Image 1 (spheres, helix red, strand yellow):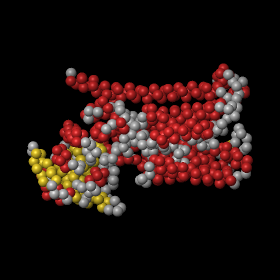
Image 2 (cartoon, rainbow over the protein chains, first blue to last red):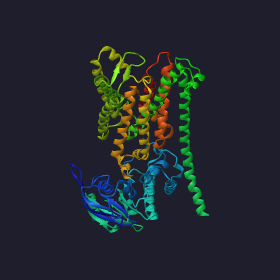
Image 3 (cartoon, each protein chain N blue to C red):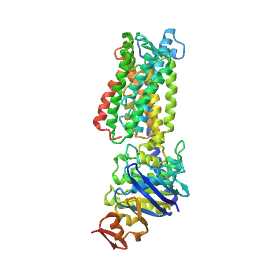
Image 4 (spheres, rainbow over the protein chains, first blue to last red):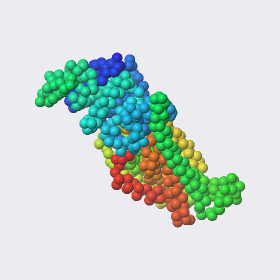
Length: 250
Length: 361
């Protein structure tokens, strides 16, 4: 077990967001966190990553308590791509190089350059390598951020809505990359996502969050019309298309 | 064979990155050469008309007594002071721009320079750390540079804390932070004016003259203190260069990269305030060097702080040395205050930046 979350609770001064959230993640698993806006999906990722400090519960990563390990060590375990990202005047290579930050002592080594270079290769960004990231398209930029997270050599990759601002082609591309990376590196992924059908294409584990609580968790069998309808308050039908379930709103 | 091909391709990407890095080093070397060339020119111009040979001999300590005094007591401290203070102001601006994620941040635009000047005025006029004389050569003699600097520093910290708090509260755009800086500036200027109001006329004249940035009042003691402080700050900033690079990608991203954002930001702002305080208490207010140097360099080499910090420092040295040489030669033998020159050069550039929009960093 690479990640175990037990009884996680988080509240902002004004309102409670997460209540008693528990689940676990094995190596090689792709977990999709589903739920409506404001139900605490992003908060959950941030609590795992200690960007926010959860008031209750524990998060164990690779048998380390997240509360007790230092920030640098944590950054070596989790690569995180947040929902909002600003571009700035830095090249693709330099941006991915920052993914090595948790490992850099005084200066970068040959090893760092090699890792950055292969992350860039993996995401097929070679031809953009020396371009400034504020000149890239949304899809390319998203790929750069994934490459940066990969350069952290993490055990877990976390993505907060990685496809929300992308067109159909880029959505599929990014999802396929996440799938490919998880498989080839033998790591795990935790992804919040709004597009249910996209989630069904890549994830092999699901969590349905409703009002900050886990309503259902498990494999593809929990993605039923009743559950989706309850969580999103929208009547849906689950059809099969070439062996993959497809959710059709009614 | 496949493996070899892979290694070959792999090193291609790294090699092109390395040659990209090499270009930044070339920019650094070019600006360094310009600074050296300008220093030589600056050594040779001035009202005491010394030829190059005399200048050279005096540097080696073998010229006439007069030329030795001119070179060692007047021109050299001034030139080294310009190089050091320019570098200091530029890196302070560079780090402030990064820490606040605000391309318009700098010691002068955030009101930190004016706060330092206020603090220095308190020390000089009220605490008696300096004596003000009405001679043009030495308007102010600072008897106790430590008290002046400390007082300037304390006031700059107040301004810095206000700015940090405003920057932290959401909804403050880069432009409104600068507006807050304007408000702080006028507040501290008002304070300075009040202090000067209670001084006698000779003191007022001298104090006003003092507030204008001027490199002519530097003696070796001040140059040495400034050099030590600014060198240490540069080392500190360079140690944090990777943190600053991470900060560019946003607060959450930096946290997830293992950066202690609050600590890095507080440290960066604190050390830049020290740099500002030291240079303001010895030289008065020199505007725009801190804003423009990192801006120019960022446009040339990009935002990588491994190079942005040292090359901005060089650019700051170049700009201040150039402005000071201009100030000395423009209507010689009258020497203009260098603060006026940097503002003349800087204000149009600042307006240009505003017009171009501040979103593109």
